[in-house]
Image (tube, rainbow, N blue to C red; front, side, top):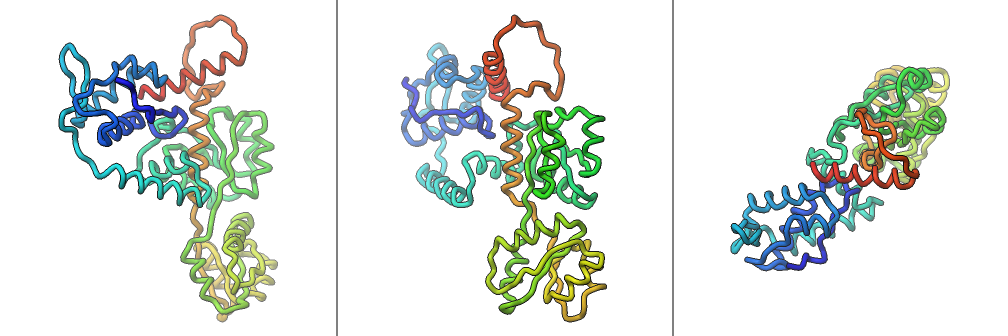
Amino acid sequence: MPIPTTLHVDPRSPIPIRRQLTEQLKHAIESGAVPRDQALPSIRELASLLGINANTVARVIEDLKHGGYVEARRGRGVFVAAAPPIRPSPGLREGFLKDMVIRGAALGMTADDLAVGVLSLADVRPAAIDAASEVLLVECSAAELDFFAGQLEGHLPIRVDKALVSELKAITRRRMPRRWWAAVTSFCHLPEVERVLSGTGVPVVALLTEARLQTLHHLAQLPAGTRVGVASDAVGTAHTLEHSIANAALPNIVLVGAGPAEGPGFDRLLRRLDVVVCSSSAAERVRQIAGPSTQIIIDDRALDPRAIEMLATVLVRQNGSAPAVPLVRRKQRSRPPSNGRTTRRSSSRSTARRIAAR
């Protein structure tokens, strides 16, 4: 039987190859591209033509058997079932997926971004990062470290190592930097973290935070000309939140400034404000200093989903690129020397096969 030309697997995708092929074959059977009672190619033929592991194809066939899509006939091979299950109209599913892709593209999301985001929301771990990866988080305060670590570990199967910016050099001297699959930090610390980790092979991802929609909605209801400032425990956090509000381009407010919620500078800033947007941890200090006419809006920020998806994509790519120093060292047999290009290509392929076989 000729394989449908639409069958395609992407080893770089965060969706497991087994899942990719299973769903495509189900769709081909439901749509009639593979007729009922039609013989399927052998496992070896499918694996060869798609360039994937034969064990993965065998597992796909077993999944289809259990689902009632195909049946094995002794001495003859595997055939499409005479009455395969009926799922919702493929046209409806295709329309839904196209709509999601279009909406994602409008937000600047790639197909991989969408896949990782959906898997994260469904609490399904992408196969390529199924084992918890270690990520280094670098921030300027303990409060920031706890906030970002909780957000990241809640969305991705990772373990977060925390480090203050001031201690980063000492930590990288004590620990092996290549144990980290990536480092993450705020935009304001990005240059310094990249400088310290330069030459280690650890990619650095800038975290994005944004004001919550409730805060932006509240600000949008204020009278024209309202003077707004931002305060937080750390100056970097305050400026990040200020930038997020500025990006909303609300025409009715005037952003006056941002800074830490303490010190004489903050006292001077408060005297120029009608509204202060601050974190819950800084709210009490702001209330003590601000006058009764100053309105306080509490916003603890939200980690931008794009930051989570960006980190997930980096981890998938890191896993597929076969790092020179693996996270778990294994004894390897000696191999004949070869040029660097061939070695890297072979390593990448073997990694893709390991992922496919899961």
